[in-house]
Image (cartoon, rainbow over the protein chains, first blue to last red):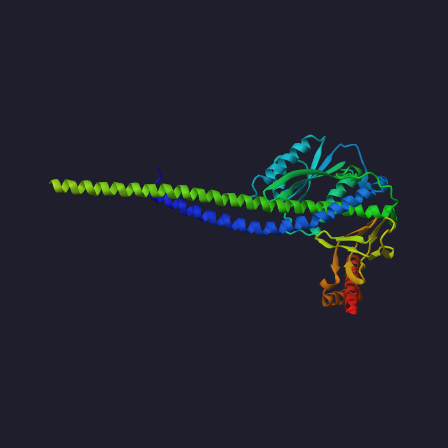
Length: 287
Length: 137
């Protein structure tokens, strides 16, 4: 049984910790709101662009765009999007585990690592990493993410990888984020979720189908990467806020427990003193 | 039978409404879209995007992107779209002057020149859009 003073000291120190975690929770909460708003606002754009591309699928000719080229898969590329800092609960661990398991099922895999957590972990397991992007800002602009898209597309177009996947944590809601692995290249509109049968309508293209597709597809890839980063940011701040709230709650429970023990210790000390005084007085009275 | 128009940028949905007519700055020149237009897919240049609804005309500045016309649905996916009332004319004016100065002084590199030209074009579109709004009033 620790001494009463020891218990009081621990309560004080845990109160300090609790103050820190509460502050971090509030910071994460405000960043989370912004990141969630951003991810929800940008989703319609990506979804629309995908539907549009599905409509255009019948006009797409794999010969005209290198981004549609299907090849025998000898090596896949994985863009792994993690956070730069920890304190986000199991989010990074879950995603990295899923990505590594996925890469083991492939004939060969190389990574483009976004975020320091992923970079470090991939180094530790000695995975092949072709590019690293630490320090993506909390409110990313498309300029920040287009670099990543460019590197990834480059890998694919030059034939270093035959398929390209995005591994990220999809934002579902504040309490739920899912590790997700999605194929980005080669781009096959027909196989996409929500694919529609080829339209019977005859589309008019301006200037012409080829030019249009060669503008739409690269744009979609940029947007998809941008969206992926936004999803990850929203997930990270949500996970961080929840983790910090749990920490604050746990600190509260611990403070209650320790305060109770300290009070019990105090009570038993007083009782003991009383007994001593009483028995001392009694001894004097007798004598 | 109205046209259902959506204008979406990566940041937000700028516009969604049933309208009577749309005039868009397509890459090959301005195109007017009325209900029952033939399916059309076109890239957009920077320019004025006009929306007519029950006799009232609204103007947006759009900067690149795509327009998908299908049946009575028009979807505009653009990098940036600004309604006339959100445009700060004096800022656009400054941007125009800055870009003109850079171009007049002879830009340091081809990339700089391209940037200045793009900047100038955006400023001009913004000015035209905010101008057209003032004229109407």
